[in-house]
Length: 214
Image (cartoon, rainbow, N blue to C red; front, side, top):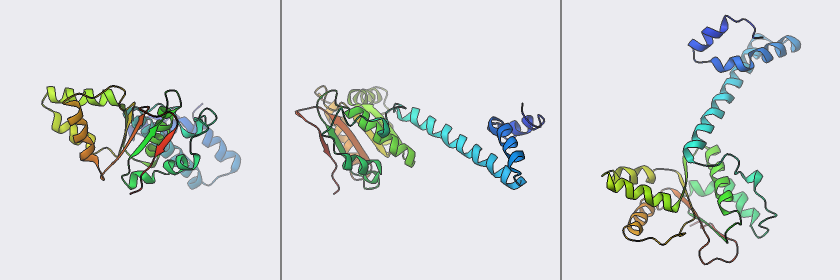
């Protein structure tokens, strides 16, 4: 049961209806703990801020096209024991984003490259960066479609401004003209300005993670 039902229309009018989710519990807590009115109000405001942050993160996660359960905490190092944990931890700090450094994760199929890259994307999203996770073929298809609708320049600039683009399955299929030119132009636009990640299994028999710092 919600305390003071008359608050509901007022909170909705102020676009604070989320407070209703925790109002009853916080009201009970305030009574039991004999909280001051300001402390009670502070708890409600903290709850609302946390709800909004979570909602915004969920929206950014969907926009980034990153799987919600592909996190570093869920990555199975036992399945890929050769993974350099220290370097993964370093990538989790997102220092590579501030340095505009590229990252290449290479290894055989089924070794967790995509999971690991999405986990790094999670870290970047939590830090507040804009992220896009996309397969190499889908990225090329989007650039091709933009040319067909005379929106290529706008699409190119849109992609160039994203803080982190994570390209999965790079080189899974050979690029043909003009795909190679389009891709090169995008990378050139982002070079030393934004960070680009890629996974690939081309010509690699074991795990490799390249993280240039210069």
